[in-house]
Length: 381
Image (cartoon, rainbow, N blue to C red):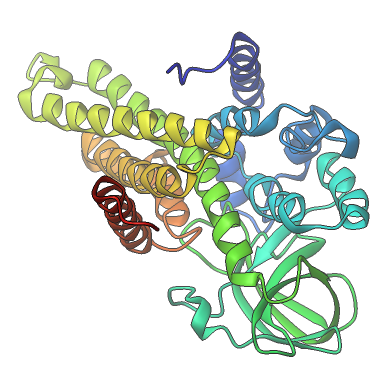
């Protein structure tokens, strides 16, 4: 089975890499981090004009119709450049939620605006600095009015609307679209380890909402949304891991100590070899996840968890060893090493911690193995 991308998508990757290099997206990430901007609005507008945000959105709704594989390719390049834009919130979370559960009218209303960059969307799930367990969510909707607090909400400081996870009148979880610029919504930007990606606290006080998806299907929809987003985030983490490895390798070849490049010392060789192995393992798992996502294959839940864990571990290892390879200078503000470390830590928590995804992976592997054993024994499911 060939998991490689088509020539068209490879060309898209090269064009995206060239554009982000020309715009010096890494320098823009530093500029945003050192300011109160939240994101690079100019870069975001250019990305929207090129149709990147709507890569996976069907052409009938104003998207590029490239499918999820196109979104994976773009996510990898954006991850490698640390572009300070709300791409993941709009493309991986809001757009995917609406494509997954939206009515025809909701798709007509929201997807074209997302695809063209006229609106920024996000997902409002977590309710405080703890694992976002669905059983602990307190935000509630009564008579199509939402009350509760959500934090941290990625790009909640700049988003126009959010897909909020809350309890309906029957106390079951559901998805609800809420206009963040309407009455009953208060927001405050909050600090995170990576200020180049804005986060906010959203307080809802009888804010008007519209249901997204059938009543009572919230938990099922969230699981499906997270499996899709996990693959997309894995590509963003893969891009960051590769960029951090390239930065460490480049420095190891040009930095001399005792008359020779530090890359010739065994300690540095071992570090970079470990990062290379972890990155290539993450790449293999991410490609498998991309195939499962593009085909909506039954293997998607397992493939998504595997890709998420492998990519998260690879990005953290690459970012950490990049700092170590640079030695004392790697810890300074002037070098860019800390920018990758910040993004690695932030993305590791984007959909729940790596530990949460490792638990999901184990649970799904156990379920698959039990099903395989039952099938071999002739036991009916």
